Amino acid sequence: MTENSQHYYLRWTKTERYQHWILVVCFTLLAVTGFALKYHDAWWVQPLLILESQFGLRGWLHRFAGVLFMALALYHAGYIFFTARGRAQLKALRLQRQDWDDFKTNMQFWLGKRTAPPEFDHFSYMEKLEYWALAWGALVMALTGFLLWFEDFSIQIFPFWILEVFTIIHLYEAWLATLAIFVWHLYAVVFSPEVYPLNMSMVDGLISEAEMEKEHGRELARLRTESRGEERN
Image 1 (cartoon, rainbow, N blue to C red):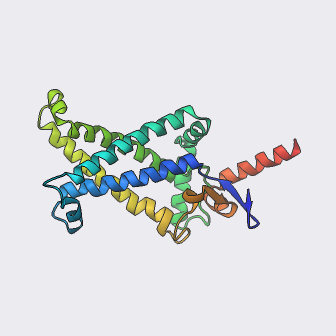
Image 2 (image 1 turned 90 degrees about the vertical axis):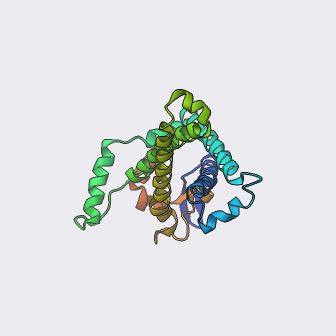
Image 3 (image 1 turned 180 degrees about the horizontal axis):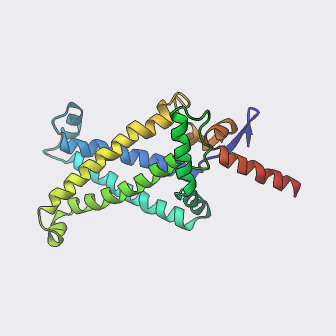
């Protein structure tokens, strides 16, 4: 598609964008209400604790966000396994030998040993690692969160001390996920000088040809080849 003489490609469908923004809401609520339990003396926690003696607002918000997060994860699993678009995205997210080659090439570029970075496909190795880290983190957080929520059930299966282990895993996985979002993801989509003030692809679903050439050159070359083949037919 074209817009203002610029050619645009579909990067994210409306369904994928909805999943992303629901994830943003869930993650934010979970992070704020979860850390509020651990760091209850912090000034930013106090508004959540105003009604704590009458109504556990913080706890209910955390559980609500957790249930919504798990529902989203199940929906996403159905999407990537049972829709044509989802299966194509899952296939593009598979780690391959090319990702290792791209990583080495990128390291050489950052160290000044190459004049140009690698040309990535639909997903770079960095995006793939971020996705699979999210999937793994979601599984760990959902499992430990469930066992901590229903501790009467948990202690029928595990010794009581294991709940402390689940608590530690839950906390440090939360810190790892939060730091990854703030240090890595937000920089890439918001604060990087190349996209500031915001990478708009998660708003309108589109990516310009210039951005494609810079960030996903291998995919763009393939699309151009396919387009020329269709024109000849």
